Length: 259
Length: 328
Image 1 (tube, rainbow over the protein chains, first blue to last red):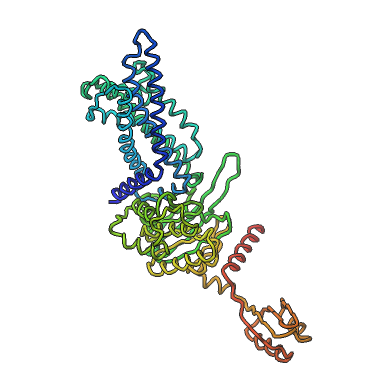
Image 2: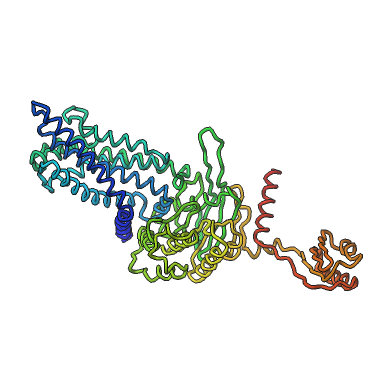
């Protein structure tokens, strides 16, 4: 019962805050869409000038990549920004006083954020497909589990950065680096042996195969799916371990309420 | 730690040492112990840096103590964390404690929700609290639009709405004007009496502590230097000091006569009025005083015994403690 009440409270707060900060939410989406348009039309102009048609098929990859990247950035930054802003707003310690425990609070926040992010990202996906005129295969039963598997790594990074924010407070510079690092993870060819161990990389490749090549999830190589799952789980575990260690350090040094 | 029945909060040998790289260690809390009975309203007093907030945060598990134990209703906090937090709520000093972009009511719903309280069942109580703290017409206003006093009241309402048997209020009247501070303390006093909650109240405002609390724990340099009922502490510091107001100037020779009997006599005289403060060493000295005044032809306008207030008691205790520390 306690857990249900907490989940309801967190869900309501998320929607209330989204409404109160609507301008910020909308402007974030518009700026991401504009970056996509720049990338897409830039590539299109480059492809038109290229006689070899070498960029054929890259447009679908760009849409899938942007979709995965947007979900990953929303996911990791949502979690770590939440912790930073709670510390700034002076509410973090109150959240720590919940009898369900702070980890459950974070877990609920992640679930609520994930669902809202997916809803937003789907709108964004349709906007990208409409802009490019390339309509991808939207097999929800195959894409949904792959998105979850892929984003495990992003949430791992979110937990790690959130934990570091509890101790070091100002880590915003990391956020820019991670956003670019995620782009790198998505564009490095997954066939490079070590690339599959990067967060998002293998998962994004599998999502691409479903959305661009029309594959079903069970048609994908099991080894690839398991690799994506293992990599995501490993990043999440490391992120949670860093979060726990940072939380312990923050409590030992009395830093939870500081900003 | 051996737990006692009928104890709401038990702190045993609690110690917190902060160590920073390159700096010397700071003993914020130095092995303190105390107990609080259910329904008791206890004040936690101390100068800045005495360790009050660190103590409260150690009890709540927001700061990890270096050593010592804390038990809430006989259950050790460390081994029952975080479930044990269903027994406590707090307004923390130096924090907003609230979402300023949410309304008063939304804040209440959120903080009670994460404490596991279904809103439907407790809605009437929340409304009662909002009414009681004079926030009824502001319940749908975003907190950022409220005055400082109303924000603080909202934070207290959120803590009380969680319906926990123990409530920690760390500086609840900080930054409030005299009127709002008075209002808040009157409401707290009534609620503590009506609802039989255990309240630990830390404040620099002695009037609040004296008015609301039955007992006071005074901390200095991380240690408990006094732990007693306010009544008893006041009795300890009560002196036979009297203030007198006489009509007209002081009659000739009276000051010398009084000074011979009552050392430490203070006199301020004008052609119209004389103010005196003196200490009577023995219980019968009041008769000696009256005889001297009558013989000198003095006309008494006013006479009153000086009552110690908590502020003086506190300052005296802390001063003595500092002298003891210097000596040792």
